[in-house]
Image 1 (tube, rainbow, N blue to C red):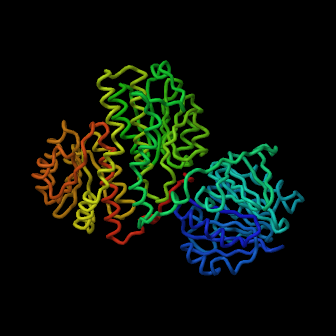
Image 2 (cartoon, rainbow, N blue to C red; image 1 turned 90 degrees about the vertical axis):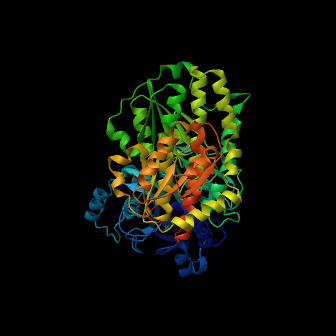
Image 3 (cartoon, rainbow, N blue to C red; image 1 turned 90 degrees about the horizontal axis):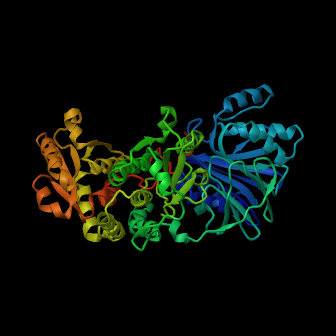
Length: 613
């Protein structure tokens, strides 16, 4: 979603803000803007469209003088993308400037009240209400900090705010609730940002603001306050990953780079938790006694993370004999789920800030369930709120369409399944040892899928099928769950109508859509179900479909008899096959999108971190 950068220092601010906003382009946006403090003036430049357009308007920031400022990339929620609706927003009398990430739920009520007091509005946004609300309290005689405090007490919803005041020319204030915001400690300068990559070039010392936290800072100092307004101390955390982790590193796109980073990401996630033939999860407190008391596990997530949840149902139920129910986070609260002390709610989110997932987590805790989060971002809202958390250690993921975050989430599910089985005693030792060994080998097998030979084959398939208007993914059991994510990748970045179905459901409706030239991607990696899936392949072939098959090396000769082209993966246990199967599907979607001329890293209408409902 929206990206925020703020800077107070001694160098010209606008070029630094533009540079930081460029590092946040992965979050998705439709307009951009900056506000620079120049003595007693607030100078704003903003425009609809790409950041490059804004940069051109202000000559790379050189035309806006001043050493303090806030910048923003907006993803529209209230009001269409336009210059007027772009951030920053200036209050009616010009004293307050605001950038905002999140949703102000009661903005209409506040706007009506402010209009009644004589405030004028010039945009359709909820954010302009915040600027005018702060200015109202400022005009009432409160100082800058207290005006912000009084305003956020009236606001309902989610927000990360960067705020400037015309009468405080060297000071910025930031405050957050339910939207990500970090503070960066510099040398003679200080920063705020929505995410680390925006300021990593300038500092590695950061702290993550908690909900309700406020920071008031200048170039030389920073004062932190909690939700009650009391001073608090924030210790900086040192960022260890390299700046190149947030750059393309020679790859054409972040997505391609992140696809190729998957072996390392999976290895980093698995290796520290696999010791001496046992899964060791020191970072969670789920005892064997507690696990034995469980009646059900809910897996709650959105998008690709939800599809990890679908995979988890097959894996955990098979290994642990424990009922698992995947639920979309956006539906969880409204389904009146049966929750209690005997229910574990597994929350999955890359960013740890996904609004629907965060709301579902709060609902689960309110109803007495224990919560366990799988997230990638340390210090994120979900990580802090959950009873236990397992980090995926995938490193920063910049491309909007997830790849390595999905793969590491799935790897954690594999670990959890073995850990639960280990605690519950549901597996014979020989079976446990076999699965443990297969899990250890996954990173090396993913590497085999990223060799030049395999990639060239996938590129060839993409060149054959990139012009298809409709694509259907079919598979059975775990392959069916893999179809969901493979289909989503094609939709997200290639803008092709694509649907995923359990292969056995074809005859219950979808087969009526198959006609000459329709592409069907058939995944058949489970030996017990291979023949059944090939029967479905024959059904669609008889109706004119072209079929791209995906199976293991074991079935290379068999699948060649039924499909037009085939992608082969190494062998592993069928329960872990999805960890391998998804990689060629990611690559296929990438190369199809490339051949269709799509913006792979920033697909239209999508955002990386969805922090609104």
